[in-house]
Length: 355
Ligand code: DNO
Image (cartoon, rainbow, N blue to C red):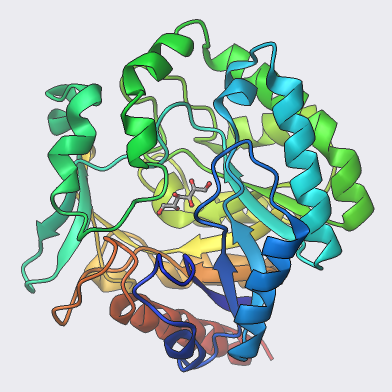
């Protein structure tokens, strides 16, 4: 595995490349062109400039998170082919710049969903949290406003103000899209992009829906092992794989995380590893990466990745806001750096005990 760190780019991230370079064992960043909109072609020049900036700091781009999918593709509207062609062009440009892993998601309307961005934990840190009761009491159209005061001025991925401004319209557009239709549209998209992925050896890593169930009546399909297997077999190509995100699949307590990892051998192209603390089945908050701070056994998760020979990029995921840091919720420097160090420690111990 390669330990990496998510970085949103100069001007968007409070964390610098210099700081990332100094986290022990981190050699790559997972980044994006944060100022592009879904559907737009990423030019080779822009990708190249980003790559040069990252490499000048002594790091490398280990992959992209995310190249977002235009709603026309997810909805399956008549103009989707144009956006798929643009996506293919972006993949080609990434491939030519020697970038071989792309994380994306296929969630309608919202990306990840949380009801609080700064819930206080007993140690005084603040974390992202989800409560089904709060969701049920919320109007999705005003949800953004209700949480944005805790965003620390950051634009949250998937919660861009221009999207939130047309949210009503978006719900309307998805009204005929059910799970079956969403699967069909994903298949159509994957079939079209696989040739360029084969040509440039690009691993597509679909991110799970977070939480791993339907919210606000919208269909969500990347939620459990059965659905992932369906997704992989409907377009059976090794480049059609997944981002194994422990925190997202783990929202559904029926998902056996180490078991899923073992079942996905060879098709996990990227791993997000973090912990959650459940207060009940449908109220959880994010925790420190350390197993005993939350509900997951991080040793078992890392062990499963080790056992399947996982050799792709991995990153610590959402961190708590600690030590008075002011940053994008989930994406500060300090707690994610602690997370990276902990995951590296687990990996070293597992590796040595297997020798
Ligand atoms: C949240 C992230 C997601 C993820 C996208 C991938 O923190 O894990 O926003 O990047 O779903 O496209």
